[in-house]
Amino acid sequence: MDSSNVRMVAADLLAHQQLPANLLHFVRLLRQLGFRISAERVTDLLQGLTLIDLTRRNDCYHVMRACLVTHPEQIPLFDRAFNLFWLGREQWLLELGATTFQRPTPLRQQALRAARMSSRERLDDRYLPPEEGSQHAAESELSATYSPWETLRHKDFAAMSREELQLAQRWMDALIWRMGERRTRRRIRAYKRTCCLDLSTTMRKSMPQQGEIVHLAWQRPRFKPRPLVIICDISGSMERYSRLFLHFMYAVRQGAKRVEAFVFGTRLTRITSALRHRDVDTALQEVSQEVVDWSGGTRIGESLKTFNYRWSRRVLRNGATVIIISDGWDRGDIALLRHEMDRLQHSCHRLIWLNPLAGAPHYQPLVRGMQAALPYVDEFLPLHNLESLEAVVRRLGEPIMPRATPSIGRFLR
Image (cartoon, rainbow, N blue to C red):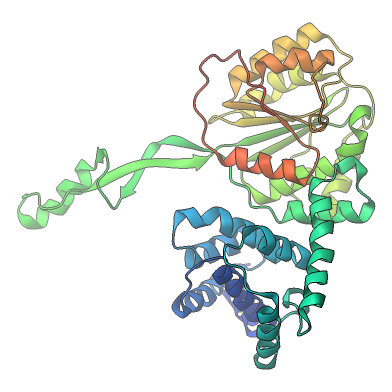
């Protein structure tokens, strides 16, 4: 679809009353969180959305952030509000207000404001505040919606029902992924003084003044997101989690650039091309056709050897981050596992091991596969519920220092 058609589609969507009304309601939510948003910024937001493809979530996110965020410290709160609001779950909006609002509005005032607002504009029913009623009814609604969200957020993936797993998958689809950045060799123009002087631009601008240097031009290093490689265990011991983790890999592949995905049981299979489909059901169906060792044995060392010898030079360039999702149960050669983990750690910028069993209160890495791999892991984190997944997303976006000793890992709980 070319740019003219995209703009026509966006204009048609904005002409519909539902989207502008929801945008205004999102602005009201941000104002309650302490954002200072003027009417001019809202106008700029509506105009900016007509210039992008509204079907691309990341484009919408960056336009809204550019128009509504005025300080870098507001970005984490804006990200959480964006994810919760546009997911369309009313109880999660109430959870955000119950835990993050600094100066909460009384529930009765919210109900009266909702009644006045409904007479002026038509909002989507999914995003309407509580209707006019008594304070007791509003408080009971808040308690009835806040508790299930807290339960779901801290509930183990293996204990979720089918409906709860669908909600968890929707939550994964709504996440905004930020990979750690790497410094490239290229430089770009800087609009304030930095350590890099752009001599060629400075001399070119001095030509109209007969070679006299009046203004100095500056450059700054250019940064790009690091590539991400995910290697997921689909053996029999991971059967309770493997289906949901496949959806997790699909969400990462759709939400970030330069993501490579692999699964392994007794052999390694690359599924990156299958996860490129826009339809999640089609993508997961193609993955199930490509993978032949579902719920079987586990040979982590042999699978990592295949990755190191066949794929590492292709996908570990430019300082990639590698994530291994496994419980550590291994029936293969432990010496081979140690050797391949050592080689993999030296080949990547950051090696993270996510274990769904590590979320247990008294968990200890006692299985031999986990004990053999831990010395070569930079970060060891649990991945058993939505709260732990949130922590993983934050860790991926945080800058880290270079390894002091490449062969020594950190055990983080």
